[in-house]
Image (tube, rainbow, N blue to C red; front, side, top):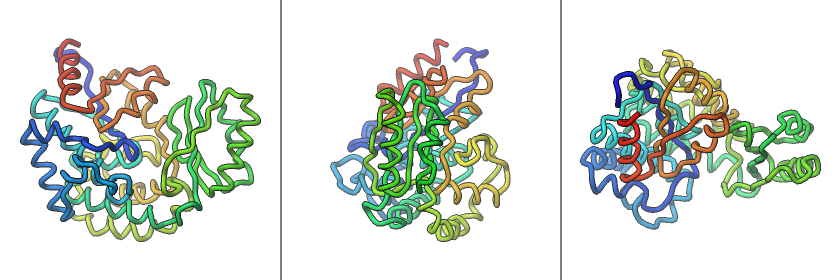
Length: 317
């Protein structure tokens, strides 16, 4: 990379990006990746290679998918750092991806992080009985925030993810989300696409609030090993801006993120408020389209070959 190239920002996708076989090629090629899978597997007492590399039904379960995604993303990152000299000054992550970003920035140790997100996933899965909640993506080139707000009036529905100028995700009680879909369909005149998400619970909605005290206790147990020195380089989904070097505030924000809106539009703008090269690392590349909607190009690393292409492109920049 040329000396005057802009600094790098790395972002990590969250739940839903998982796929069977993710990370296998990194594990086969790089000792750095193998060490990540070894450490995470030991921390959980779980064979993460079998979970990630083979066809395993547990990969669709929140309790297992969350640590599997985080581990795979860090395994990819460590390989890219070692093989290609990838280094970043800022980090962001979408929902679960915020935890990967905190590991990447040195705030959370990997072993603690995988234990935290496994418990986070278990609590989220158990918060609401299956079928009670629903999540739906609202997609449109000219998405009107006012129209969305009007459609939610009087309903137990919230905006779970403010993903881009072209997409928000609704979450709440199933019957209310369905009514919001009907209202938006009527008002949109066919200009909107409504996509029901295949999820097991209404994440990032007030229906998740009952589990927050239990999750706060999980974070409290890990507090002595959290290093908040790197926190200001990581964006907060809850606030939309960067974290502060404040342990109590960090814990509070992570707890409230469970039921709060993921303010990803604000995160993207905070991360790109100065010249930067954005690299997305994960099993999939869902964040690429969100950045494109605000006019920002993103390099994506999803496998070893794409990591090599990104390294070549950055060296030529």
